[in-house]
View 1 (cartoon, helix red, strand yellow):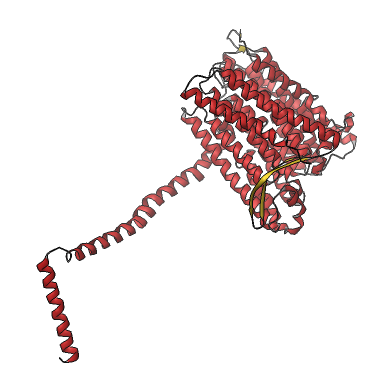
View 2 (tube, rainbow, N blue to C red; view 1 turned 45 degrees about the horizontal axis):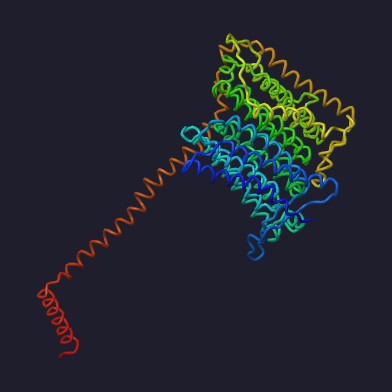
Amino acid sequence: MNTSLLVWIVLAPLLGSILSGLLYFYHIKKSKVSDIYFSLIGTITPLISFLITLYLFLRMNDEKIIFKQQLFTWLNVDKLNIEMAFLGDNLSIFMSMFVTFVGWLIHIYAIGYMKGDNGFGKFFAYFNLFLASMLILVLADNPIILFIGWEGVGVCSYLLIKFYYGNKENVLAANKAFIANRVGDFGFLLGVVTLFFALGEVDLSFASIEANLANASNELLVLSGFLLFVGAMGKSAQIPLYVWLPDAMAGPTPISALIHAATMVTAGVYMVARFHFLYSGIEEIGLFIAYIGAFSALFAAIIATRQTDIKKILAYSTMSQLGYMFIAVGLGFYSTGLFHVFTHAFFKAMLFMGAGGVIMALHHEQNIFKIAQHRASLPIIATTFLIGVIAISGIPPFSGFFSKDAILAAAFQEGQYLIWAIAMFTAFLTAFYMFRMYFIVFVAPTKHDEQYVYTSKTITIPLLILALGAIGAGFLNLPAIFGGNHFVDTWLSQLHSKHIHMDHTTEYVLMALSIVVAATGIMAAYAKYANFDVSRPEDETGLIGNKFYIDELYNILFVQSTKKLSTFIDKVVDAKIIDAFVMNSSIGFVNIGKRVAMIQNANVRFYAAFMLIGMTAVFIYLYITLGL
């Protein structure tokens, strides 16, 4: 069914970005513009997108319809047809719902966080553009339009990570994120191209791709599925393309919240779910995805146990939780993976926003031990932060328990016991390092007298709303053993996901074991850090503290080797071979020219002599040959 409203979900924040950008140029060139105008534009436009999405969601729920809007034909060359079209089906509307809602709350939070910043208007222009790019990605009707949004979130993350570009470290972090994602994006493009030719060069809409899968050989489908997932490795920060994510914390905290909760990093999971019809037929790649997710989850959790930067701890927790999501979608439990994307959006946004409130109160200090040494009284932030920590640790009845437990049960049901064991151990580590952070920042004794720090309503109200989601969002997909109706699974039935089918006793045992594992992690963190001497902080040393030296390894293998290769090409190949050949050739021609130029000297008598010599030579030739 066609509707003109789909495009406005994207256009609202896009127009907001353009308007904020124009106002900002006026602000810096002509006359100062009050921050209130940027605030209104920046927060109203995401709200419009959310309200439109909510309206379409309610219509879809009542009328059992989907929406599609074709704007124009972008490219039509031979068999290649690309329509600028948006698709509002159950999957895209589900994603748009929480992307716009959580994104809107983060925009409100940003008003308080960025208050007084010289780049306030520029920040909201970028922020709105980021949200618009994610919505293009989610609502795209074909992978080419999806790629526009895919690249859009990459560009916006680059602009926002280096927002304070006066600091060299911020620029380097932005470059790292941009380059790492280009590697993944190249894989994604190759996957789309491979799929196009494998299917017989058909129309590239998702519906057409699904309808023509039978035309392709299994080998090309496997290759295409792998290459597409390379793109997901970059966007969703999975091994080996994860290294950009911790450094991305250089940007202002609101952008960290938006990247980790509602945009960019969830794009890879969404893409795999969108191509569910492809991955369902190539289970070997699905299993590969699940293993990459499992090892990424474990690897990130191990590193997080020794981090001291509050935002980097949360960054590694995002990488770890994304690993859980890839376990689910890789094993064919698409709705289960997306359910964890949904619950994660609430508690991760809240955790980042809470961390930002603490950072602001401590004058932008991010080391958890230094934060503890100069602790401020922040009751609302402390309470909501605890809710987020409990949710991500998987303690019932908080949302993270239901979504994470479903993933653990899925791995166990599929007989992937190694993945299940890795995920269970990662759950223990998650509870440990998250409560380590909480106990150090908010609980461990300090000699400093705590002073209450006022926090603006634009910061506390979004936190309280998200806290409700972190507590209650899990009930939307409540398991049948608790009397639930699996609303999310039902809503996403188009994905033909696998579902949990095991006897209740096994399910209860797995749940109990999951709770015990998480509780053990919490108790271990309590025993070590609840009364920790914060004046003697842990340092980031050793193998784990130095993140297994992966950054250093990548620097040697890729950065330094590329520099050496570039230097060799510049100093040897270019200077001594190519330039030498060209210059020596030119010198030879110049010398020849100089000798020829001796003849062209404008001396009439010299010319007459040459003519005489020439005529004499001709006469001699004629005399010899003709005998004249």
